[in-house]
Length: 178
Image (cartoon, rainbow, N blue to C red; front, side):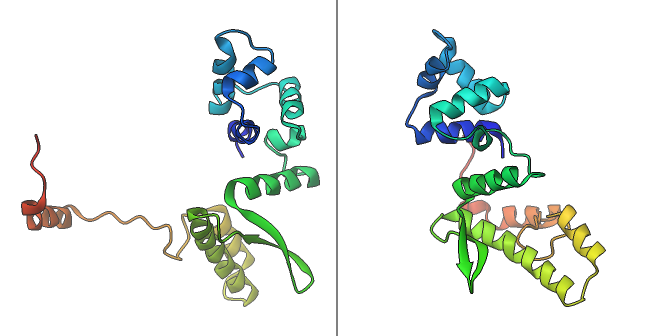
C-alpha cells in the first residue's frame, strides 16, 4: 500500500482539496497544494510527525496512513483495512469461521481479483492433494504471475508474419494516415 494513495484516499474521504489539507498542515501560500501533491505522488515521504498530524486531521490512526508493517498483527490488520478500501476485500463468516471475500459489487476489481484468487486457490488445492510439493507451491507464489498457468495473466504477442498478414487482410478497413 503506497502512502501517497492512502493520503489521497483519506483526503478525498474528508472532501478536502490538496490546498485545504496543506493549509491545515501549516504549508502557507502557493506551496500548500504542491507539498500535498508531492506526498500523494510519492515524490516526497512525510515524516512521522506529519503523518500523525494528517491522521489527526483525517480522524484515523497513523497506521491507517503509513505503509503498514505486515510483520506485526496491527500492521497486518491495517493492511487488510486498506485492501478493503482499495479492492473491495470484505470480512465475513462461513460455517462459523471468519473468512475474507471479494465484494461482487466492486466493479472490475472483483473480476480481476477473483481470477487471481482463483489461480491461488488452484495451486493451494494442488498442494493439499499432493500434486505438487511445498517447494513448487512456494516457487509459484514467490514468482507470481510468471509461473501462473491459469491463463489469466499470459501476454501473447503475434508473430511478425501474423501481424503483417492481418494488416494486409484488413488494410481496406484501416483509416489512412493524415
